[in-house]
Amino acid sequence: MRKKIVAGNWKMNLLENEVIDYIQELEQLYSFKPDDVELIIFPSSIYLDSLINLPNYDLGVGAQDCSANDNGAFTGEISASMLASFKDEDKNEINYCLVGHSERRKYHNEANELLSKKVNQLIQNDLTPVYCCGETIEERNDGELFDVIEKQLKEGVFHLSMENFKKVIIAYEPVWAIGTGVTATKEQAQEMHQFIRQKIADKYNEEIAENTSILYGGSCKPSNANELFSQPDIDGGLIGGASLKPESFIQIAQSF
Ligand code: 13P
View 1: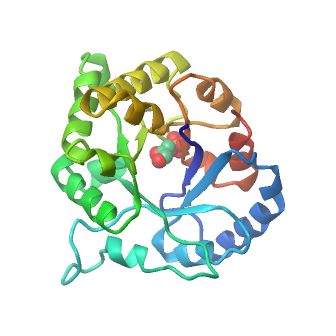
View 2: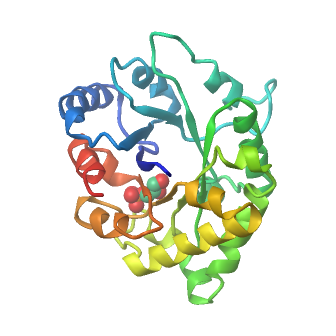
């Protein structure tokens, strides 16, 4: 069975003292998280160490980006092998990394070809890529939405072998719903999640499609999470703004 996941993408938010407060509050609320829901936080890289040092949690921790290269002269970049090297028996680990968030695609011109290399780096280092896809409002209005998503999947992750694709999580984040307060309706989200699952089944097989977690992202919050998460092909959320407060983040985790 595929996992239920609620993931918080902090983006470029929170100062160090705010992260300390966040962690304290999360510790107090953590017991309210349902056991069958996995919680993941994607902080700015500078805070990864604080999160993997947390005691006694099953919290997933992920980076927001990684390099498409192995290592070497790439100033400012973080390699997948560096992320994977944070392994210590007494600590949590970095297990996940976002790839292809629409903000990376838009502000850093990251195209599918580059993203496929990042996916490869993560797989080689035994980390789980959370591969983001989504259409703009113009692409939706022009009726190109399914073609756009299919291309993002084909060029970003469908080069993987069946064994390696099993490690991938998909996040559908319609660009027009990110940070806008406009959420996709449950019908719009379900329609695209079903399409993505069908494409995975066509490329690999039904079993792999059934076992792939597909998360929804875009203005998801405590007041709309339940109607989204009750759709058959929506396995959880990738949450931006509403993950910045532990209380609303945990409330979303309770929304299945
Ligand atoms: P918001 O929840 O702030 O719309 O952001 C969604 C997102 O981009 C998560 O990656």
